[in-house]
Length: 147
Image 1 (tube, rainbow, N blue to C red):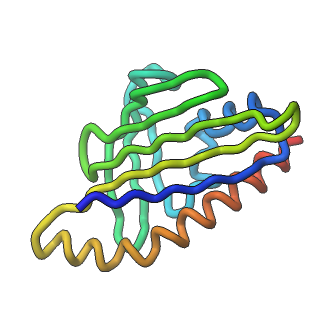
Image 2 (tube, one colour):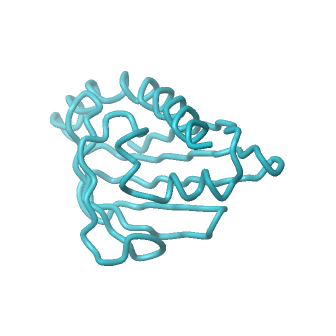
């Protein structure tokens, strides 16, 4: 079963700063709740085609190789799994004015079926809402702290 989580936050910073922060894989563990590992597996670190291996601990460790499948500077980053847990993350950026940005996150994930999938779902679902809330708060705090 596919699950979708959506979240929006406003950040007191220009869209170029917010986008650069989210687009930099090396900062991701600083704000994304539960992310214990993210490593590039391609020489390309930004834009369509860049790939990363990651492990997210949300109740249980979930492993995936993700690939950037859509990228538009200061507007969009989309990451889709090519191996491991099935997921798509879409981050859109909207300049509200010169110094304020709205970030909209759309995250879809599909857990495996069968008894193992039910056990994973039981561990993951209660944590997802907390993870999204903490990630959003950390993103705001970290980017605003850059200014």
